[in-house]
Image (cartoon, rainbow, N blue to C red; front, side, top):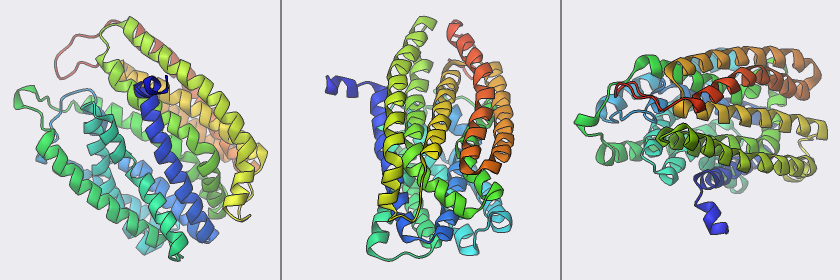
Amino acid sequence: MAAQAWRQPTIAATGMFAASGAAFALGNLMLARVLSIEEFGRLALALALFNITTLIAPVGIDQAVLRHPIDPGPRLLLFLLGTATMAALAVAAGSLTAGGLRLDEATALAVAIIAGSIVMQVAAVLRAAQQPFRSIAYATVLSWSILLVGAGALLVPVRHSSTVLWLLAIVNLASAAMGCHLLLTRHRVPEKHRVAIDWREAVSLLGIAAVSTISIQLERLVTPIVLDLRALATFSVLASVAIFPFRLVTAGAGFALTPRLKAATNHRERWALVRTELRIVIPFLTIMSAGIIVAAPWLVRLLTRGLYDITVPLVVAACINGSVKVVFAIIRAVLTGCGTAKQLSHLNLLNIAGLIASIAGAAIGGRYGLVGILLGVSVGNLLAVMPAFRLARQSLRRSVYQGRPNTHVC
């Protein structure tokens, strides 16, 4: 029975993301144990900027390859290198002037972003090629790197976040080089099957991915502004034990669902896929939340030697926050897999509206500390979830669209 369950794409993908998420969380806790609160706060901010920028820098092409046979050749890779470089320089400059990072930290972050953006494109191409294990390996490079660096920091003293960032940059550079070689030698699209990038669709997909990614990382961006870097350090520790499991479900559920919805031949098949997804995710969320509320406060005190104190109300707020984001991720996966271009555009607008509402909610809730920020962001996300749910139902009900080769969406 267990072996049969692991053959289910959703369970296998969630399991692999769970392992990588546990690695990221454990590595973060190790670093929180050895770095000062201020240094760990700056590292947390840099990692949030890395996660956001590496998903935005491909300008939607990483999402477009999931829907169309776009050739990952030298021309595309050079274009992505250019967009990643521009994004990295902009983020580095912003982190220096407004984010509180030092020059060495911002420089290491820029290098990591350039390489990491290519790595994410490699992961997307492998995902489109129905190679989930290899794709997840590339998509989770950061998580395993954090674990290795954190373990090393317990043996060899690390006092500065810049050391951690430079090590992450080196790992991403090596991964990008291997990934580019893999794409150029094994994953070229035959010329007769290639399609041009539909930039209107790519921009919509970019908007969806960008706003969704910023929404996931929003607390890390807002906390140092509304509160301070010490509060961000506390949030990062909280995220390592109470929020990361929800992000694993968010990543794993959508990861397997989108390509399967795209391959579905009729609306009944699509509905069956979504029902199967929900039957797995909902009970898992319930059991997981209960376990987190009981164990998280004790676990944080143990692993950080009492340096950080996480309260039960803060953990409950984190579980509410995570559950809302899981729901939105499943809706987004449905629309990415079989939504029309118009529906994607509408989802993009809803994402933006939800992000604005979440920022406002975080600013208002910040008066009540981290609990207020988490609940404020949750309320903002809910305002976008409800109309997005209606869009997803419409996309599942319609017949499979038969259009031009470069514009079909399901």
